[in-house]
Length: 358
Image 1: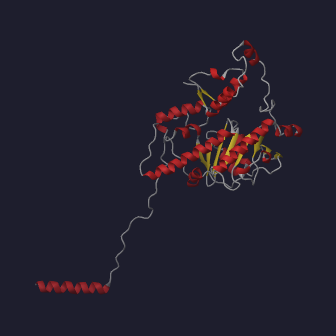
Image 2 (image 1 turned 180 degrees about the horizontal axis):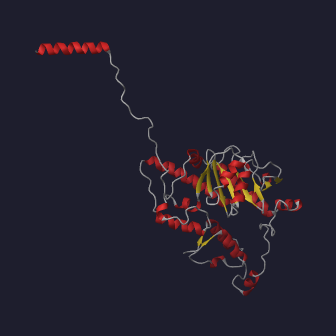
Image 3 (image 1 turned 45 degrees about the vertical axis):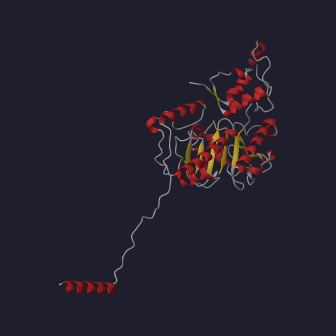
């Protein structure tokens, strides 16, 4: 089986002084890993003498800290305030803030959020997260708007008040240790499935199968601990949650960018299903065997999915999917109401005709 390399694998490869151009020819790179390899090769950041003894010696020593590297010692809410403030202003944290602003703008431009809706969070310590503020449009975020909170939702730093829905993100992170970043929005087509209470059918588009593992969480008041708990109950085996009558939340173990990709993928998928269902023909699916191939790739990427290990006969189960609309009112024949006068006339005419025939 071909080896799948993630962004984390490439970063480790580079830290060890290896040449990214020497990756195995049959290796499969994730999109973020491919971008990182290109950046290293094109940006001239390839370590000098990567093939010689000096490179191997350097690889045995601790790598020098990059300005964008996380702190050598993970921070927590118990860290000294001065240390937290220095981290909050560090180049590493500023870069994460800019990433949040960029994704917020992209969500707003694609109409995945409306008004001041939507929120994002990134785990940055043992029990710390960086998150968006409340009452600010995601299309106009600035790095200085971001907030630092602990895993109980207490705001530690930031001039604006943290998002009211941060408890959901934090409960997800506490339940799923791999959850590095999460994104919440209201993309219309995916939210329509959430409102209807329908899980999108499977075995139709490969990208959806590989990147998303979808479930529906029951509705509760946004921002409430109960809503956060119901979503968190699903994140062990699902990375894309449809929130009934509300929206969508996605998470990633790699980056906030990847969490956002899931938002794009499920929205495009749901939109495609809605359009395809209007074409008047049954929708084609690929086979359970073909889905198993995709699940092997997915597992190699480290993505969660509840279908790992299922038998082929248990895959591609779309019994809950009923595309199209049928009329709910059955056709009926108007009832005929008898008219006594008309009945009398008909009887008289009938009697007269019979009499003449005699």
